[in-house]
Amino acid sequence: MTDLRRGDPTGLHRVLDPAGVLPQAAHRLDTRAELWPDEVRVRVERLNLDAASYRQLERTHTVDGAVDGDAVRQAVLDIVAARGKMQNPVTGSGGMLVGTVEEVGPDSPLGLRVGDRVATLVSLTLTPLVIEDALARWDGRGEQVPCDGYAVLFGRSIAAVLPDDLPAELSLSVMDVCGAPALTARVVAEHAARDGRAPTVTVIGGAGKSGSLSLAAARRAGAGRTIGVVPHQGEAGLLTQAGLADEVVIADARDPIALRDAVAAAGGPADVTVVCVDVPGCEGGAVLATADRGTVVFFSMATSFSAAALGAEGLAADVTMLVGNGYLPGHAAYALDLIREHAGVRGLFERRLEVSA
Image (cartoon, rainbow, N blue to C red; front, side, top):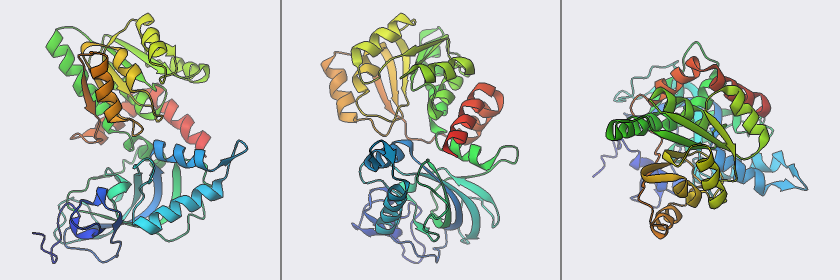
């Protein structure tokens, strides 16, 4: 039973409704600024909304082809006010934040100090959050959200001190997806060891944040061939210029036959397929693009895991399917190293930041 004087390292003591669930599953969290002994309070300076969440908000508040930024901003404010955290009720996803540590509980195991500038590596869907500036500096037209407020980290939360050699916006953007390259590298290495050959790796959404990092990670881990799948010529040009994939193909990932055939023409089927797109309906194509005894890694929060499992069964596909949970030991440092090493990856990230700005 949780000692209410000490709290629980999972943050269970912050759950208001319904009782007994973990913070991520809660409808509402306690956002009081006073800390339990193992907690840390962070003064927030920027939120990074999950891509699937932001796209859903953007689509919902687009009128006659134009995004109503004020409506998007108000939607985020309403979610946080109602739930005490940023958790999109449609996608179930949140994002992460950057801020400065302003108080550390005496029993906190996180190793943080007052004044540390950090990025949280746990989702906003389980992080108590209070917004105090009404997001006045955000126009509602990008995933990165200037913000003044505070957030609370638990004993089992994860946060990384921002590096001095990279801009904060770039570091935040990288850390938002740092689980993808780390797991991709692990899976590629395991396939190489098991099969005694360098595997073919396909990344669906290869020009995006998690996709570009996953392509770089696959090469670093020993992939023999990398295939990047993108939806249109514009992204194909960007990914080709970045030099991250041996083959760049254009295909609608929601069209399973088109995706299968495009990957096959580029040297597939893949031993490892990594799904990094933020649209639903890509499960069947990912399975068909993957060889028997291959692995499909789903990093998109738009994935229907029932559709993936039942689809693979219906196709008699002997594939292993993994859910990318966003955490592996050392994942943030690994992703930041990839950004430092690969000018092509960094260029794709910086271009996204420029467009967002």
